Amino acid sequence: MITILNDNFSQLNDFLHGNSFSKIFILVDENTHEYCLPVLLGNMETDLGFEILEIEAGEEMKNIQTANQLWEILTEMQADRKALVINLGGGVITDMGGFVASTYKRGIQFINIPTTLLSMCDASIGGKTGIDLMHFKNMVGTFTFPEQIFVYPKFLETLPFKELRSGFAEMLKHGLIADKNHWENLIRINKLDIESVIPHIQASMNIKQNVVDQDFHEKNIRKTLNFAHTIGHAIESLCLEQGNPVLHGEAVAAGTICEAYLSYLEGLLSEEDSQIIIENVQKYYPYLDISDFKDEDIFTLLLNDKKNVNSKINFSLLSGIGSCIFDHQCSQKNIAESLKFYRKLNNA
Image (cartoon, rainbow, N blue to C red; front, side, top):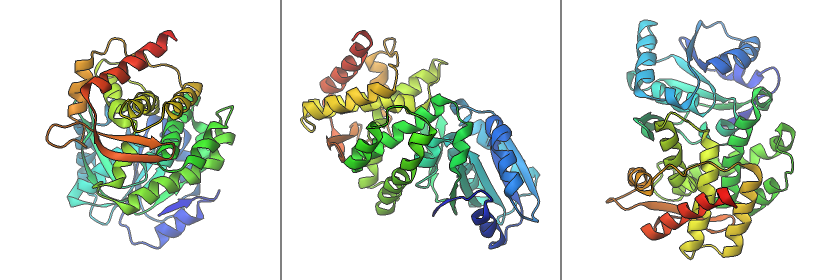
């Protein structure tokens, strides 16, 4: 259940009063500790004891070592199965906190309070928890719903522009795979800022939630949410491996261009629609330099994608603006051609 919080967080307080938790653990990174935790604590009304668990910010912290440290801290602080974890942060925090909570003592309750556009519209919704393994994205995790998701849009005021733009990539994706009107509303935005984005957050959340409600364990239609992520995750992983991490949404934007063009090469999407998509994504996102990435290194990562079966690379690709198919196997030639197309954009 997704709830938009009012300024006094009354819905969160009603939730806390309506359940018999033993203790609260609030997971933050150094950014949300500074900018968002004071707002939460200033409005949270509870007699329960609580502890703050802080990790460093960044995708590179989303690993088994961090998870192990958090499990050890929960154990040392005698967290029992009636404890509640509050994940206050972006996608790393909600992924990590959900994973730690869903596995500690075989599962304790958690809620998500997303603080970035990416986590509000995408990462906190759907019950996917996880950590990265080596440089492979989200390779270890669980399907576990949070008890609740509480969204406070004013937290977006704490974001640097790059983080706002990162989350916008997932909103664009939601329109491309499921709702042409949503896509068209978004690309009418001339200046990307909080005021222009906030009116569209609810629609984006609803698209994600609707898909998840139909297919929680990602057996069929939920795979469409992976559009732009097969190549996007490979780019993100290689950047992370080289010690030059990029924001998730930046990689998804690059993946959107590659996979829109790949959809055209595979005969699924018209050339006109692919160009409309590519030109509009370029309007918001700078080119990511992938000239140092060899095709074979990208293919190695593609072969490790979680959607694959029998070593076949399964893509979710567009069959129109607002329409997506899944489990589509592409020719290696066309995948390489889509990467070549993206590299050439740097010289366009």
